[in-house]
Amino acid sequence: MDRLKIWMFNRQASSKENRPDRIIEALSLQPGQNVADIGVGGGYYSLRFARTVGSDGIVYGVDTNRKFLEHLSASAAKKGLANVKTIEASSMITSIPAGSLDTVFMRNVFHHLKDRARYFEDLSKLLKTGGRVAIIDYAGDVRHGNKLFRRPKGHHVSKERILEEMTAVGYVMEKSYDFLPEQSFTIFLCRRR
Image (cartoon, rainbow, N blue to C red; front, side, top):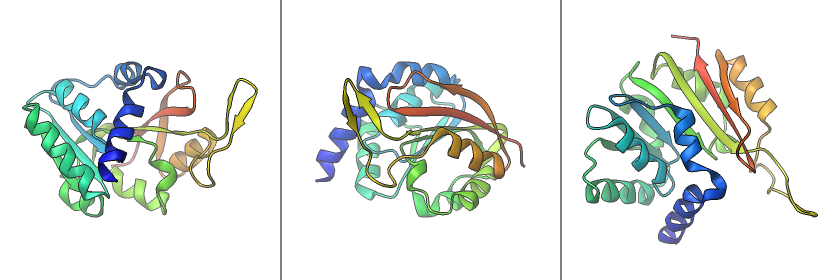
């Protein structure tokens, strides 16, 4: 079952429809930067980030699913990417050095977080001054032609809700993109430190 999920997550992340190249471009990652990919799924973005930040940067792949992390580690090793470190989500705050992250990337994760205010307050401690949090999440129901596809309850969150919650805990919106067909994409700067 986990192998099927990994395949499905990577297929979805890499599909032209979901515009992975534009997402990478919008993130403007640089060699030597440190990135946390929270909710690695199949590892597609973690591996792309690792190539972009190079051997002087680090990509922390964070997930609740140990099998996803094992797959990411194996994939990184196979591709010769020694700058990928995997971390179970429950130990993220103690495993990533304080003030070390340039960017946190979350794709389809925000709606799963329970106590988001506390989560993002804790996360701010891991960010460098000027560190960013990029959030991509399902925006709600989607219309394809004349058919309406409803998201399961709790598996989406409006862009307005994300903005409201992030602002309330000390983040400020840096950029917002509208090129994804089913998701919002917003980058926030951390004002607290």
